[in-house]
Length: 154
Image 1 (cartoon, helix red, strand yellow):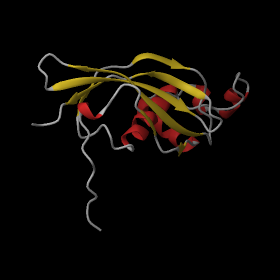
Image 2: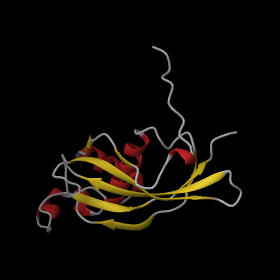
Image 3: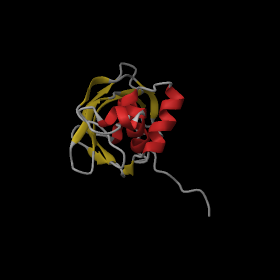
Image 4: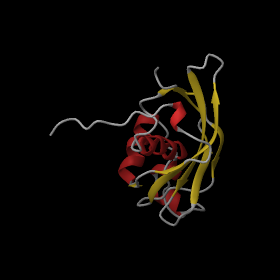
């Protein structure tokens, strides 16, 4: 099987109000344990079933930043930002609104809130609002990740 040709999207291909929904992914305790090992964050709310059972959540929850990491991976599966990406410019207004539990299936809703061309006219900034949503249609994380993108080559 040959390599699939991915379409190239550039700054000009996006308009305010554009929306995208990623595929879904189920999060399990294996991802939580792996993330704890990678990050060194062994907080018992994530890693100790007995401790977590006595918490307000009643069970272990995924790290909030693990949710953000999975979010960025799900967004790449859209295939619309990669070709024109120069740099992620930051994380703004991020809110952790609810937990990700073992077995939750999550996806991301993306809204283009603003587009702004840079002064050199060769790049633009997309203001992208993300919502991380679980299988119960609850928004569990939300915020903005502005992206610096290439303009279409002449």
